[in-house]
Image (cartoon, rainbow, N blue to C red; front, top):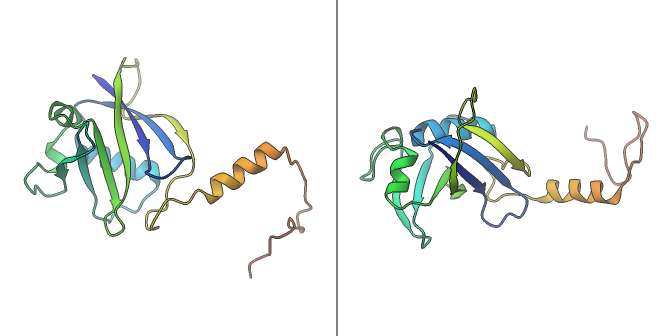
Length: 166
């Protein structure tokens, strides 16, 4: 069975990811996939928080079993059976930064397709060690595309207001 999850970051209007993931995938394997998808360093502590439909944390899954199960022993299907309709992948424990993965629906398995699969993305990846998600780059790019500005610059000329770093 293939499950669709929507990834968002609290407080961000621009970040969105939509994933198709096999239900028997472990949280550890999902963590490895998300780590590569976000381009994060592999040497950081992470955890998943299982969230129920009332928005309360029901479980915490870490690399080591702290009582709710270790990430490598718990599957997405098991979290759904426990009533955890969302998972927060905490990629920066010090600053409590994470991506909320909300279960959307079951979906049809695509033939000749490898899962997990990124099916939609919007916004820049977060910076792994930042205290919060920065939307400045996304807003700048949106403004540039909506203004229709097609200014061209010589190779040695910078746009007004941008200084060359030495």
